[in-house]
Amino acid sequence: MRRPPTDRREAVVLIPALDEAATIASVVRIARSAAIGAVLVIDDGSRDGTAEAAAAAGAEVLRLDENVGKGGALAAGARSRGEAVVVLLDADLTGLVTRHVRALARPVLEGRADMTRGVFVGGRWATALAQRMLPVLNGQRALLREGLLAVPGLDDSRYGVEVAIGDHAKAQGWRTLDVPLLGVSQVVKEEKRGVVRGVLIRLRMYAEIVWAYLRRPLLSRTPRASGPRRGDAPGKGVAPKRGDGAPHDLPRPSPAVQRKAPRR
Image 1: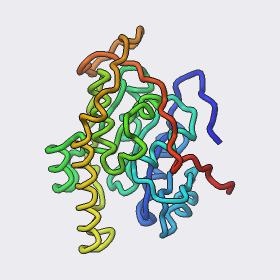
Image 2: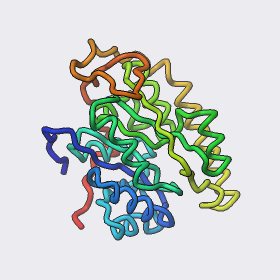
Image 3: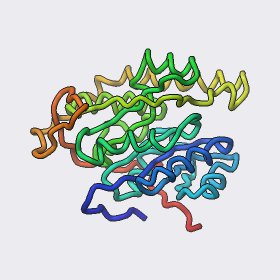
Image 4: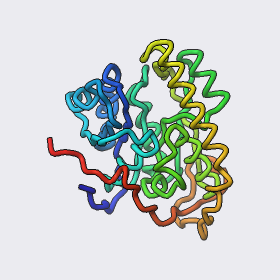
C-alpha cells in the first residue's frame, strides 16, 4: 500500500535488484547505516534469493510478479512510498560506505539541489573510465520523488532509465550536483553471470540505452515548468545548470507495476 506523503522532506533509499543475492545484503547494510530513511529493495523478478537476502539485511522488500526492467522497478518503488526524496542505489556496488549515501542525499534533503549524481572515482579502472566517458549512466542519485515519477517513459525505460532521468532534468532546468564516490565500483556482469551470459546481458543493456537515446525526440515534448520555486536558492558548492523547475503531474502507472508487495 502506498504511504501518504509526509509534510517535511524525508528520504527513502530505493534499490532495484535482479538476481543480486551475492551483493544486495552489503548494499542494504550500508544504506541503513546512513540513517537517512527506510531502505526499499524492489525485487524485479529475481530467482536466486535476492528478496530473502535483502530482507535478512534489514530492508523492506517489494516483489514484482514479473521483470519490468530497472526503470519500471524504480517507478514501482517510488509509487509505493510517500517520502519526498528518493535515493537510488544499484544492488551490485562495492566500496560503498555510509558517507557516500549521505553525500548523495543531503543536498536534495536540504533544498540545495534538485538532483545529485554519483561519479565513481578511484575504484576499478573499467567502471571509473566508463563514468568519465558517460557520467549520465551512473545509477547512484538522489532526487525528488515527484520528479522521478514525472520522467517521460520511466515505466518502460529499462536500462535506459538514467538517460531518461538526465534528459528530463535538463529539460526542466534542475539544479544538478555531481558527487564524487571515492573507491566505489560495481561487480561487472561477466563476473556475476559468467562470460557468455554476461556479455549477452551487457549487449542487451547497451541496446536499451541506445534505444533510450533514439526515442528522445518522442519524449522531449514534455512542457517546461512554469518558473522557479521560491526559497530554493542553491547553497555553497552547488552550481545550478539551467535554473529551477517544478515537477509535472505524475504519470499514470502502467499495469505491469501496479501490484502490491505480498504481506511478509
